[in-house]
Length: 552
Image 1: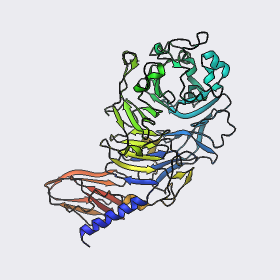
Image 2 (image 1 turned 90 degrees about the horizontal axis):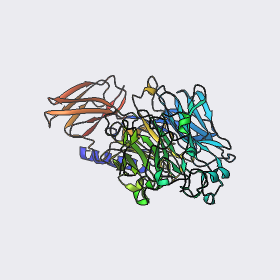
Image 3 (image 1 turned 30 degrees about the horizontal axis):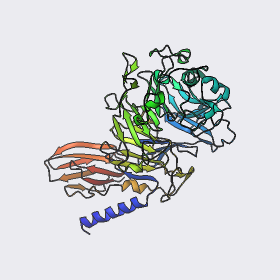
């Protein structure tokens, strides 16, 4: 069989393999993807998984059978996992809504529980997200119940309440060394209302952007008034970011205050106490615009862009979010400028509204309707400028280059928390995934750990698929490059004729660059005896791809 027939047969087999895959790893271009390990904490089951870019499990923190995500998890630089959880049975819980949590726990790499902290009673409940501060303290979001009398006194139009109570959010900072709350902030301390002059908080909403309109309501009068679904910390400016999807806004709070100052409107580096020092996404929420001005639409995963990035990265220090309901049938991921001026200790404004006017970046899937999630979901800016995006309601995560090329795809292979088989079809909400986060290969928490593929979440996972995953549009047989012997256990010779100079790059199946150098002369000899057995990709300057097999 000649080379052309070999190539056509290879293309057919790869297309057939792609057609049969419905869960787990769908596609992967390791030479364009960012190398790392992906943290996955899917809904409706208790375990936290770390998977490689081939979709294989390299580590798992098992949870108790009666626990569920509550909803986030983070790996620390010492290898510990900090995660939130709740009981599987919520039928007797007095406070419950989507995103409800209960417990924050620290587990060692070997899954030993080092610390736990819980809030879930008739008056308060942890929910959604946490943020770990540089000193190890943990910020937590808490619903706190306000009864009908408190709502009336605060100036809420209680005729619109359907549950005769409200659950405004507060933020607490807990020191894990002694279980003490060392700082807190309450939304209820920073209200404004323009309907009842004889009640608390009366004022002009448009003249008080640092206050929260207690009569703003987009949740049909339900008690879950704010539904804050993400919290992050800006260590450079000592500020807290809070995602408030019912307001379609991001809020920024000054963390330099004392707890006493955070309850008022003076003090702290901003001089504004616990009042909002920035809000953005929906000017109408503070009576400075209408729906035509709205930028954020029930957003998730609001963050300061800094994870694993250097300050020289073009998006470092900016704000980002997953913009869930921006379109009738599509979502987007967005990045916008952080306009904080540390010398003036304030965010820039344009007239009476906060800057900027629009996004620095707005992206969706190359096929926009392939990215649509009305809730959950996440975005991560990777060090190679790619975006890692998770469509939470479909459990679909993908990595996309700045040129909008999808270079990695993964579908959470669970249905109601149970593993499915390769080839099974999943519907919306079958495999809810709150976020996906990728940690670099050289992340400090992995130092000294064994991270080897050990099976798949899905039933019938196939190790060979990742080895065969060259895309059809890349030539498997590169006539300009001869590789021999192939397979090899020691030395390999590479020869080429078309150019005087040739850049040779060799990558493993995780996308790690094993070799990269420009050569002249048309021939090189490489000693690969110390490399692990497996398949490698040889890429030339012309972007041709050839496989190299190393045996032992």
